[in-house]
Structure formats: structure tokens, C-alpha cells
Figure 1 (spheres, one colour):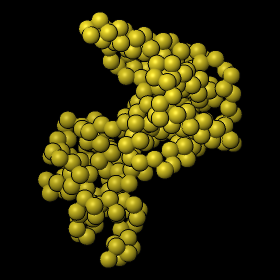
Figure 2 (spheres, rainbow, N blue to C red; figure 1 turned 120 degrees about the vertical axis):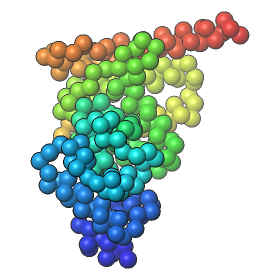
Figure 3 (cartoon, one colour; figure 1 turned 180 degrees about the vertical axis):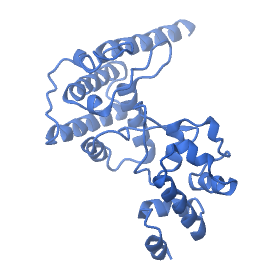
Figure 4 (cartoon, rainbow, N blue to C red; figure 1 turned 90 degrees about the horizontal axis):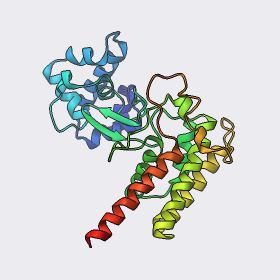
Length: 267
């Protein structure tokens, strides 16, 4: 049965069809969703406008195909969230329109590392570095790397301004990310020792950046100072210049030390 669905639904990859079946779509519903995606690709309107043109039954089908819990309120969606509702279930054509590493699907938001806009060689390097990990281990690694690239807006620490992929993954920024990752690991080891997770981080960092180094697309020079990260690429932007990785790790480290001191005082 699956083979016949594949032949009649050229819109979907094998992985997408598997996802739709896991989400309990019938053959007719899979065909219907395929028709919706084909119509969306042929439209010259925005994704939000296209969703507004759908019937209530069609919106329910989009909801089911994306495994959403709540009904779709098109007016509440961003353009990114709307467009990703009309993407392949296997995630192969998800978009990150503001380059912040967070993908909106409907009103939901998920962290991605590598970001969906990253070059293919970065994704391949990450897949190789995390090969064999279970879902939980890989998710923790992705969160660690995401925080180093984008930061988190907590405790007064402003998240870094998002960069276009060609800037985020140029030689300067990759080199700076390498230095930042190693500095972060050094701090962790100083605070916690060589825990199992820190050993795992060390292994992943070595594999990830070694793979990028070997790529014909990127020349790797880890000796470059991390303060160069984003300085040149942001010089012509009107947004506030974010902290450099070295400044940011000092800030994060200080927050950790402050929290530890406060805990010691309470105890």
C-alpha cells in the first residue's frame, strides 16, 4: 500500500509519508494534503493569505498533518509559522526567515542546531559528530551549541542579533565558535571536573570542527581571536552590536559564580 501512495503522491518523500502515517492520516487525507501543498507552491500570495483561502475542513487537514493540538488561527501566525505549516513533514524544506535558529511551525517554536539555514557541510559535520547518540543526548548537545551561537535572553543577558547564514558560517565566525566552545568547556571542567558529559562535549567538539576543517568549502584557523566574531559582519547593520563570544562567556561565567555564591550563603 505504501508503494502505491508514493507513486500517486510525488509531493512527498518516503520519510514524509512515514511521518504522515504515524500521524494517522488515511490514504485519502495524504492525497488531500499533497494537493494543498501543490496548490500552495503554485500560489503567488503569501502563506498566510493562502491558509486564509482554505476551507475549515482543509485547515483541519493541515492541522492533522502537522500534528497540532489546537485549531489554526491564521491571524495569529507569523509568516514563518504559516509557511512551515505548508512544508514537508520530514522537515526538509522548513524555513527560518529571521535566521534566529528557532523554527516556527504554526504558533509552535523549536530550537534547531544546526539551524535549518546552515550550509549542508555544517549539517553533515554535526550528524557525524553526534552519530550514535540517543534522542536525549543529541537534544542536550543541540541546546548547548544553540546557546553558544545565539545566546539566551535571560537574567539581563541580551540574545545576540541573528546573522544571515553566509555570515554566521563564514571562516571568521566558525573560528570564533571553535574558540568559544573550547573556552566554555574549559570553564565547565574547572567547575565540575571531567564529567561524562564534559568528556562527551570534548569528543563532539573535536569531531564537529575537524569535519568542518576538512571541508573544501571552509578553511579552518582556530588560532584566530574570538573577538573577531561578528565584528566585521555587523559593522554595516543598524542593530545594537552583540557581545563577542569571549565577553559573553565572561558574563555567563559570572552569572554561574553569582548563583553559586548566593546558594552557598543560603545554605
